[in-house]
Image (cartoon, rainbow, N blue to C red):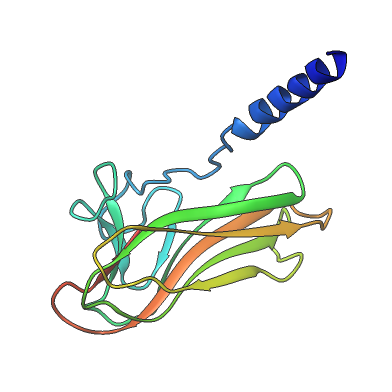
Length: 170
């Protein structure tokens, strides 16, 4: 009986430990705050990307890679971190029927306090169907370099310019 109680206590502790939700370290993770065609609070945009009120999965705005304009485009944010370790960047994405991707990717760039890379960035290409449905994609990477102070998260895409329903939404 003592062994069973210890086992149940350990099992309960594991469930409590693993049930804790990870902290979201991003500022403005839903792209809610900012000008529709300019910089969005805490995010740096490059290319034909911006937030739009017709594109959210939840909330009032969503990020749009504009398939009707030339590519490529990226959206990135630098996050201060307290320690080396394993980090995950995850997003929900939707490709409209006429969005024809060359490539979509997520990236974690490992930076020191001066924003210089301390090791090679972790990059993951992903492909999702053009089916007007939301898909969850993520990248997980580990950095053990003791100079790690920041991580730049980036989502990027390049596409064939087309018409009709041709956006990639985040």
